[in-house]
Every structure is written in C-alpha cells, then in structure tokens.
Amino acid sequence: MTLRVTNALHLGSPVDLLVTGERVTTLTPAGRQPAPAGCEVFDAGGLVLMPSFIDAHTHLREPGFEYKEDIASGLAAAAHGGFGAVMCMANTNPVNDAASVTRFMLDRARQSHPHGPRLYPVAAATAGLEGEAMSPLAELREAGCVAVSNDGRPVGNAELLRRIMEYAADLDLIFIDHCEDPHLARGWKMNEGAVSGLLGVKGQPVVGEAMQAARDIMLAEYLGLPVHIAHVSAKLTLDVIAWGKERGVRVSAETCPHYLLLDESAIDGYNTAAKVSPPLRTSRDREALRKALKDGLIDILVTDHAPHAPHEKETTLDEAPGGITGLDLALGLTWGLVCENVISEAELQRLWHHGPAEIFHLPRNDFAPGDPADFFLMDPDELWTPTPETLYSKSCNTPFLGQTLRGRVKHHWISGRRVV
Image 1: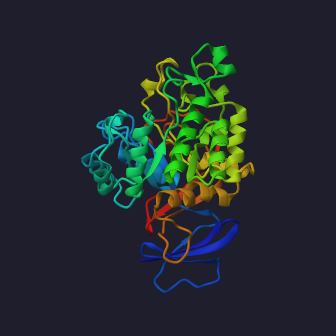
Image 2 (image 1 turned 45 degrees about the horizontal axis):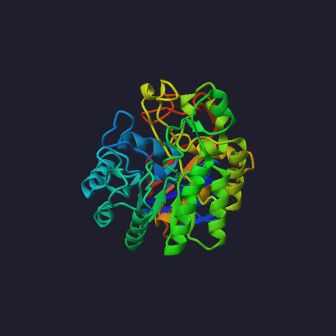
Image 3 (image 1 turned 90 degrees about the vertical axis):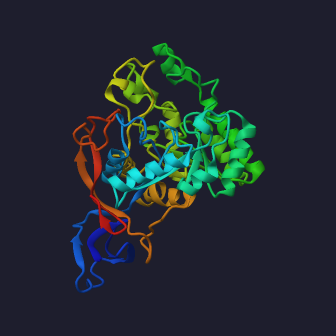
C-alpha cells in the first residue's frame, strides 16, 4: 500500500509525506511532487507532523495489577497520546525477572494491539526486585527485554550493581537507575523543605537522589560503561550529571513533564494527586530542569506513567502511593512548553523520539527514505480538558485533571498502518 499525506506542517514548513508499505519513501515540500497512481491520499489540512513518540519509562501494571491498568488499556492511551513505543518497567506481580513474564507481556501486547504501539519490556535487575541476586539477564534479553532496571527499589549493594552493569553491557543492555538513597528516603511523603515543614510531614532530601546518581556515574566511569539516570527531579542531580558528562562519562538522563510544570506547592492541602516518586521539588529545581532541556543536559523526556485506582489515591497523604498517569497527557503538557518558548518543536521531537531511540537502540524515524513509517498528526491549537471520560488509561490519577491543555493527536500511523 502507498500512502501520501499532504499539506502537513513539519518543523514549521508545509510538507507532503509518501509512505510505501511500512517505510517512509520521501518527505518533500508540499505540492512539489504529484501523488503516484493508485496512491491513497490523506489531506492533513495543516496539522503538525511528528515522528511517533517513544516512552522509555512506563508502568503498565500487567501482570498482577490489572485493576490499575492493563497492557491493552495502557497501549490504547499510548496510541492516542502519540506514542508508537513504550518501555514498561518490571514492578509487576510476578516481577519481570523471568523470560516467561517477558513473553507474557509481549503476547498480551500483540493480542490487544497487533499493529502497535510496540511494547519493549525492561528486565528486573535483581530477582523479585529484592536487591539480593542478579536476575537471569541473558534469558530476559533473549525473551525481548531492551534494558535493565530495579525501578523504584534502587540497588544498594555497589558490588552487585557493578556486576549487573557489566553483565548487562555484555548483552547490549543499558542499566536504568531510580536514584534514591534508601535510608535518607525512608518514610518520605514529599520533598524535604519549607512546604513539608509547614505541613508537618516527612520529606525526602534532594541529596539522596544526587548521591545515588553520583555513585552510578563514578561506577560507570570506572567501568567504561553507560548508565541512564531515571526521572531526574533536582538541580543538585543535574549538577552531578553535568560533572559526569564533562568527564566524558557515558551518562544519559531523563525527566518527566510534571517536574517541569509543577513544584512542591502542588501538594499543599495534602493533595495526593501530586504525590510522585521522586517527589516534586522546589520552583528552583523546576526552572533548572527546564534549562537542562534546552541545554541538552537532559537527554530525553519520559512519562513515568504510574496508574493507580481511585481508592488508592483517595486517602491520606501518608497512605497514598506515589505516581501519576501520563501517556494521555504528555503531548499536551509538553507542547505547552513549545508554546511558552521553553523548548522548540525540534527539541520536543529530540526529547520524545530521537533521544530514546538512540539511547535504547530502538527504531528511529527521521523521515528519511527507508525509515519506519511511525508518525502522527496533531492539532497544535486544539484546547481540551483531561477528564476520566477523555482519557484512555484505566486510571486518571493526575493533578492535571480539569485543566485546559493545548495540542492533541488527531491521527496516528505505526509501520504505515493507521491506529488512531
């Protein structure tokens, strides 16, 4: 099948896109070339053309927690949010520390969304995420895992972490670390600072995140291996990452839309919808993260999509789990940053597509001949309001409910096949 998408806007210029089968054929200035005979023509009508986003940090909850989210609903949210691929973390039940769990995830994805979005499981670094013994990484790699992480339970044993990083590298897998000192962070409810003092709740200091990142970066330098720092929330951690990059360490880093748009004041009034892990920090941290996007210190954006059932969030701040949903909202939230001139449209595409594709060796679409035809069309001016009825995820635990967002996916193709 040959498809021609006409009158789209790409990086501010009107273009026509020609797709043959699953691949891009050409991207040319609009009206420059006639459509081939028998070609299906889709008039974009001035919608913005982007490569499908890649979310390198997602929690899809299945197996074990399907009441929060399952693979079918999570991938539906991804497709409508502009994501052509998601990397799902291992904190399921059972944990993704065995090939049988990896294969189950992939089978569920193929059954529910045979034409995409694509699912890329992340292997548990240690058995049961317990931090005691390394998972069978070769078995997990062979089954289809694309990276390794102990997710929300950081590996405290540096010797074990060294072995994990070395073995993972032999398998061409990168280690992703949720950086948090388990002792400094114990019992936290939010960021440690003025707001936690006013509310009288236990806070988590930024130094716990930065210390763990520093350990990882020094170990990566010593071993000559890459490391990826998950969901950076603090300026101090950025300083550590900058130090590592200046030394030539192969360190990459991610952050999430909520750390760019909110600060610790969002949790005032004991707002459980704004409780995330790591916690929202100060406005100074938020501004530093915005600058790091522009400077390239932060390599990619991720959602850290963490769905929870309503009854789990509708409780006290002490008892509520951390996490918010993000797949449905990520485009609208970060397109807002483009509208505010925090980042450019090209930088948005780098952060959501080119960066994660490069770091994790996933299919990449630069709209060059032969690239995978993974792309979407968005209305950059559409205003919409997130509600339980407008979201495709099973859960709607987000502090952005009821707010007006700008920018929404209208049509989405993966491997040349329309999925939205």
